[in-house]
Length: 144
Length: 395
Image (cartoon, rainbow over all chains, first blue to last red):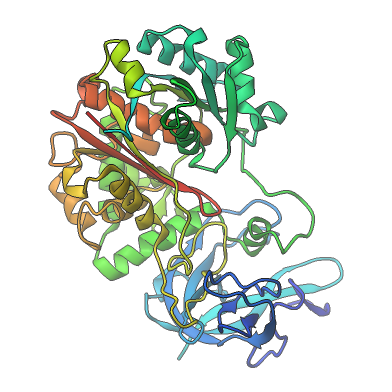
């Protein structure tokens, strides 16, 4: 990795704590529904009229709901390495939040290493670099 | 039945990459539908167009664009946009007008010209737009199809060969369809040797985009009777329900599902809700269905639809494919047209093309791809942002 400064690819969506990073979501103060990306306006639970929310750190471990990879370079705004290297993708169920969140898997981990139900944790890894900084994002990494 | 409307005529412009203006495909299809119905254009009291977002302003006001191209004659006009369900929403608008007694006969039409290359989101740095966000993170359309396919493999024991069998079946069905774009019978070897796009899906298991146009002439049952067509195929249901909170399946273009953590909230599958409402509207059940046209954006997704349409219990779709049940000549043929595998997707026309096919099937006019004795057919499709549809037609 280069010695450029590290920056969040999307500001304010995850803590930059390198050991135990968390996604930053929101929780409705009235009904307890979680949101990621965070929603701070009107609760979308049809039974709830909530309009106030608290920022919360979401669970940083979960179980794989499903997984795949990207064998071809996606179009912009994706910024690809040259030459393009395929990467894994996992959809992960968070038990407490009762929701599924997508993300890439860490470098070197692809479909052959994964299974539905497997436990994974959230880590930070580069998404791409620009002239000024390395942009980091959340990725899923198998536990143990 | 008081809630039925008659399908007097159907017509299509063949799918392909023809490079013409979308309105030419729409007018070609509309004229074919008028001819099939045997009525003059001047009798149409309502023009219901499905919009395209890829062809500039004329596409946003597609209903008026088609009406002008056919010759302004003072009909009422409407344009619907609902992603992949746009055609069904245009049909629902016509159904409502007819059942409300505001018009007797309507033209429903959708057409598209697709650009070359990827459909990329608008430029800039816009993380608040879920479509922009997912591409930035490297999540494309095939990602979602592949997640559903891989989950089937791990939970139900489906194999890559099962998904290939769906593609092979559809390629055999569409082989003689004059409106299909791809007319090649693929073998297991062809499919399994095509490039991996998103594990476990290969290039030949993911649908392309196409140009095309489809149109229908629909009317009140009274009008059909006066025309001597009381036995016309009927639309018995048009379901265009939204999902119910909370979503159980991560859907394009979102990177997360809703949370089902709040008291009293359950996770729901959107795809299953669409046909459930259609069955309820038509007052029939899955056991009455003889033929289905479903949205095979990927070959594996067709198998999800079998279960969402309740044609078999959850997890058993692969057995239907292995038995040949959903092949022509089988117990319950699915995608006799060849499906998206043979057409490629022409978004605003596709849901209407599904109904056109079922109309030909129920009339016994489907030629070599005829499903013998078909009396009830159902369509299913799903698009972006909570849009989808299911239409039931019957004799």
